[in-house]
Image (spheres, rainbow, N blue to C red):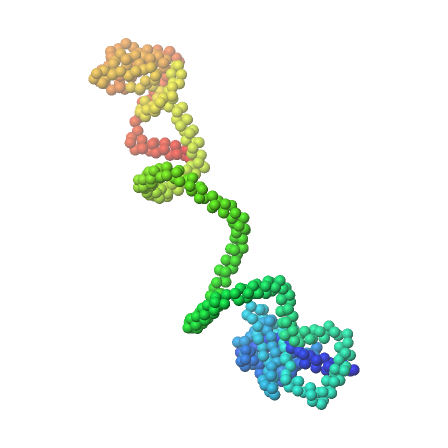
Length: 494
């Protein structure tokens, strides 16, 4: 048998049992979209015939060519609003009537699928696996015509020779030529995987049917109620239609929330398992609660007076609590500032420097005599606390010296003379010459003015101590400010 006859045999068998093809599209301009579709056979399609989508005319066939593997490539031009076609697009050849011409019906595919693209400069192409071409009724009638009948007899007689060693290809043609068989195989495979579930459903259906058979009155009432519900539903069909129209938007809005709910359920699965494990213990505790309540009643009766007093106390303390709350609210900014200040002072070494200042201050204010040191219980801030190289009026250098006053507020002259003698002896100064006592009403500087020594006992006489000058109020304020500044610098480690 020649090769053309073998090819003719294969094409005829495919035409009698076939169905399979897919649609592809490509945009050529802003108004039109260009796409090619590959069929096993053109089925009489020519240039200018119609292209439909969902029963509406959307374009025309621009050309029909032959591919390298002897398939029919149909070039389509459709309206641009129907492009681009997706990778799951499908196409089929349908007749417009029993004796009318054929046209191409296409489905552009789903929005979620990827866009169909061309290769090698060609337009986007729907492959032959995504296309179908059902057998027309006129083809069956042509079998009985004399030429077709004779050719069919020849084809059937030589079918074995034509398909020798090509069984797999023939099976592939049969599987692809009949989409119904493909869908049936997928359905059978799904049912095979769900055989156990189907058996359970059948058994449960039998039990339900038997139970319903024993309750005819309940079934009658169920049917009556279903009829009432159906009637009421029919009355509200407009509202139901509006709800169904809004349902897609609602589902789109609810999808993120449902995904979060699903994630929450997955995250809460361990908690549910733990609750399930703890359920027996919870049940045991609930069974013991009545006994616990019976035993706890006497104790609760005794506690009741205490609770009443506590309630009174809590009610009486409500104003104080409000005041504390107001104080806490108003002092919160100051507390935050104080916290920051204390942290800063601690970082600057304020605590250490302050303790050191107290220690040095205690040492500086300590007095001492011939027997030892004395740490005063308090610090007297007066002119006697300042350092001096000579005895001042009213200030004693020893701890045993007592200041006595006469009734008129003047100190005794003998005591003043004895103190001056003690201080003169301590300073190794020459003795004073005997002279008349000055008037006590004279100024203090004149009464204690040292006398001119006769002959110095040492080669280098002790120079006289200058009289301290009293600072003016402005100078005292400046000195005090300087002292405070120096003290802060010391405490803050500056």
